Image 1 (cartoon, rainbow, N blue to C red):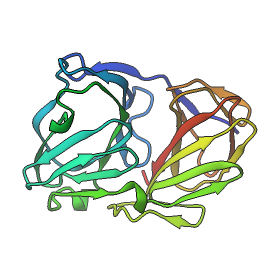
Image 2 (image 1 turned 90 degrees about the vertical axis):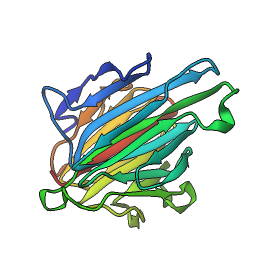
Image 3 (image 1 turned 90 degrees about the horizontal axis):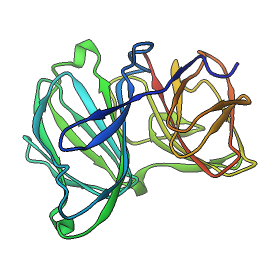
Length: 243
């Protein structure tokens, strides 16, 4: 059945020349599952002279989900949380009735050149939880399940997949996977959530034989099992959940 909808995304300047590739929301699709924002940033070389710090700003009624492939970000918030975000960990901040946070270069890297690369997603909270108490939870990379499926390496970041359950708590059914494909491997992706989309990070992905170019999002048909493969080593993300 392949891809139901293809989203190309667009570049967005968050200030100071800090560019992200924004896939959600889009004119053709506002959300996939609970995810209402999908931003891909980097790979960006952070020079000592660069200032891409995201200064304190507020959120309400949603949760931010930050995941790094490379680099480091220092998170601080109005709850008193101070946490260095590192590759492979899931950082879930529930804004609820209101929170203020910042995301900055860690002090230990102030005089170093390094690469930042990752994703930040926003998840809408169900109406009954929009006024929830704000919270911040860091789940270390080592705490997230990892398994091999059909030659693909799958990390279950949020939700449940292939018999493994992430320890990250959510307010509604949510799916977030980090998948590594090698040439010749095929992942048969079942309907793990009511709504799903795939996002190839660094190469072209074949979805039931149809090519989805790198850094474009493919929304998958409801209830369908799809076949995922690639001609080159590839990292892809799977996102979704209840509408």
